[in-house]
Length: 138
Length: 203
Image 1 (cartoon, rainbow over the protein chains, first blue to last red):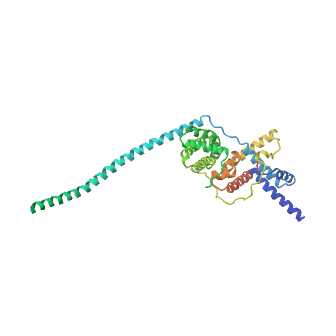
Image 2: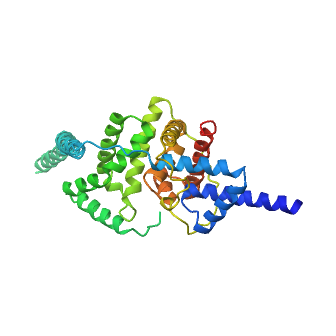
């Protein structure tokens, strides 16, 4: 008696797994036959199979929505806008970079001249002193 | 990430992507034509509004085009594209304030892939749908399932839409949603379980 109950429990477990696998689309032919035979005699598993079948059927029959014909053209138009926007942005960035280059260049040049002037003045001053010394000595 | 072996379809897509990167807009138009229906239907089932779905689908392609440089050509294009679409849809749902994410549970069911019948081969219900009563019952069931689908968490909904309506494998769904294959499979099972539960009183 106990063996028979255990056997039934195991069959219900197997049937449960087979019902779950139905949703994954991987219930083989043999398992399907066994499942059908089991649910004919099992009042517990029959409603489970019925519900799963109904859900799968409803999902597979859900209508696909149709896109309007102009969808592709609309995507491509938006895309061209996006692409056209990119070089403009790039050119602007390029112009900004060029301006920055001139500003930094001018500042650099000013700094170099500013640093070089005292050095040149210093050198010229020393040269003048030397010439005076030579002239005095003479 | 390891490279995967591309299908013939995937190889064609990779060629088109390469042409797009080289500046061929026609190539991208071919990709749009190929996947627009799928992208639109996925986002439509996710957000439930035709106009918003249309806008999201367009946005998906623009984002894809702009992100082509970051796309790894050794991997399939379709899951990458659908990932952009699904994420956009989930973002929209979040903005609407009704996102229902579920905790990512990495534990998988761990069953080996077994050869089996495809969904199409299984005909569980008796072909008695011509009887008007059955027709209306089937319609009612479909309506209940559609409503229940709306109420699922976004991740569960995405798995159901991608697997049952678009025919993606769990491996592909995992790539789309950025989760392991077994997680996608578990979500699918739980989602179907919840859908079955909603039919409790209806049948």
